[in-house]
Image 1 (tube, rainbow, N blue to C red):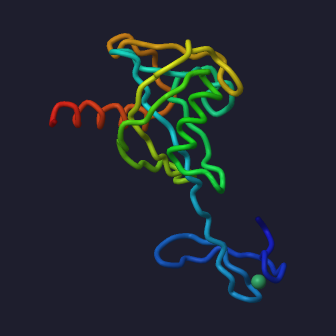
Image 2 (image 1 turned 180 degrees about the vertical axis):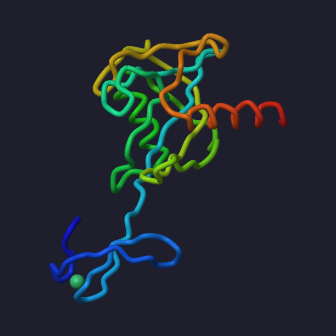
Length: 161
Ligand SMILES: [Zn+2]
């Protein structure tokens, strides 16, 4: 964005609240870049974890959990269930919230649940090239550093309980 959304004035970079922001040189409007909410699920069938092979950049062809942007009008829980259906063609039920994560670039906030595959055979659909169940000791390389952080949280919570 190069122009102010309020008055079409030129934006400039300013240091505000210790961060570099875009601000309007005419009306002083500050353009805050908000991260988008993304919801997803670690869905298990028995001991196996559902992963999808990404069909989009970034990380095209690499494996991750089914996730998607939360649409206005949908809850994060509804989004997580919908994305598992859209990307892996399975029905999942959510058991609990695992955690909330933001990535290195802070462009998204991830809301990750733990759940179960209750129906369907995983098959890649929509933005997913493939979808499969993996045992935890045979996981492929995962697409994002935060995927590993999320899995560590799952293991720690399972150990603590
Ligand atoms: Zn302005």
